[in-house]
Length: 62
Image (cartoon, rainbow, N blue to C red):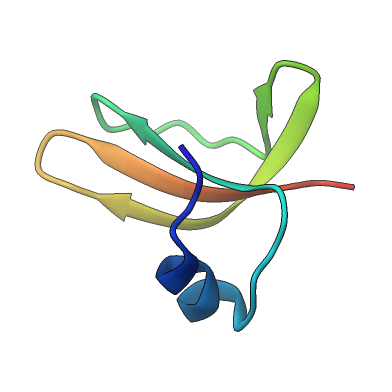
């Protein structure tokens, strides 16, 4: 899903194109460098662990 405008301003200080919010159903504890979705590569800018889910705010690596 697209990241909400308020969250973009909080994290980056402005509106950033190509930013997404990814939510997974469990916690992911293994180390990783990037996330690939299709042909695009993203880096994690913020992560949040919820009770049974984990969310990542990611931005496209250029």
